[in-house]
Length: 116
Length: 113
Image (cartoon, rainbow over all chains, first blue to last red; front, side):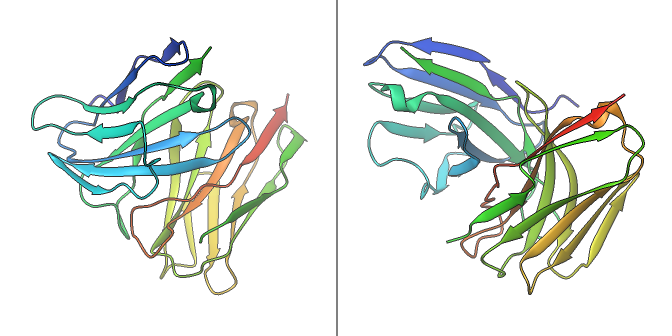
């Protein structure tokens, strides 16, 4: 069973461009979470999605950031008009059931975004 | 708001030594707490998950304890090996949710051969 897949692993963008980060959850997992790790900081929760639904986006910046998890295909984290402060590692996690008392989140290898 | 502190920030030990990593968190209303390891340039690997009703959890040479009321958790590594070198992250839930993990900055462990 393949783990959580993320691509690209590294992404370089110039200021003002768009960044699209993709996440394929583990097989059978329908819950996806995105976290961001800024340099020298801990991972911060951004958004929680189920198939075709955003459940909690309380950690996502209000502007320029959006996320989706369509019925078919990977989850996408989209950052429009990137700025240097968006440079970070973006991690995706998935779980089989709603992550709760017994359910762990499985993390992907991350996408390292560098904005020039 | 959940805040997580991990002490020490970095630790270097000789191979074979037993060691303890510490984690403290401010909001004790958690569902569970997970310990992860992160290798440079890679993702996170889940090591142990402790439910809020548990006091400790063991996996191989790893033992994690949880004192929910005082907001503390420890990760004990027995007979450390060079392959244990990594950053160890503590992550309780936060905000009354059972999915939103809050991470500390981690403890960078180096085990010297």
